[in-house]
Length: 82
Image (spheres, rainbow, N blue to C red):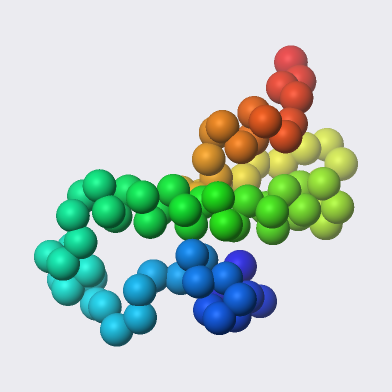
């Protein structure tokens, strides 16, 4: 998603500018980091949903994984098939 989205248009898709891992983990609290990760998942969902609905080529099904795929969004937009 970051390859096709601009920081100016979708700031929640990107980590704060100017932070390496150490600075990020020492300057933000665990709740702040969790909130940023959840916001990132919410922001990336429209692209993931579009890919699932329109862009996939695997008619038999597929597996998609990622830390930004939030279960409540999947449950809200897709019906479980057994």
